[in-house]
Length: 328
Image (cartoon, rainbow, N blue to C red; front, side, top):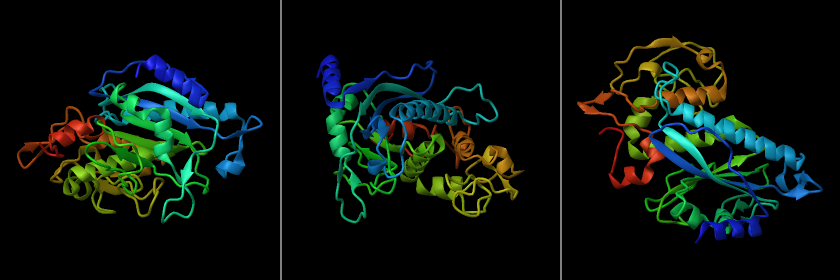
């Protein structure tokens, strides 16, 4: 389909196509084109709380919140892909996010009664078919869809969901029928505009965990993440000194090799607590991502080098076609 026709169709269906955010271009190993979709159920110029369950605010303020938060999410993800960026913030990121389009619909989310769920499930097939997802993915190269909507206990949703030729590896129930399956892989992230950048980035954190686990469970979970309290690198909910879920402000100090992680555990350890990331969840996420083996790492395991692990986010189809793992 010609893009001028597609965009005219979008305006007819959605009523509004928002211009992509104006952002500087950053050099990176992989560029991820993103399609933004916003669902704003409106009544008398305000988001309708009877629909969202917990959001009641002027439409324009929620639009601004989504735009501002999207910018913060992009900044965090790109910064997070800088290998050891806390040591060399001038290094180039492995990922760059490019906004391919931004759509808006002033209606409630379409839903359906999915078995096993106590509230209706978001109908991702309906949303994406309406948006013309095949053209966005197969012609425009979109690799991620960021859906700005709501949760509020009135609809169910997945923080991340994937479809493509290599199946669904995501933080969902991995139902192969709940997204349109296309010739290239794309991942849908469902954000809640009642929340902020940290919660949106956490969706990506869990997706990173899922794909790295899929690539090599033992290397990622056993060696990189480590057991709770073991002093390795931790994961989204558990920093190296974590004792419970979401323990980002724990002041207990532990010895950890997170800043000099090596698969065999021979890296230098330091005594560390939440002061390193200021007890802030978003700063923890960035710090953790910057500790993943990235561009230019010189890590070796049993004589074999470790590749840039960001290939599993930036180039999933290529990695799967090559049967790539976390060790060359």
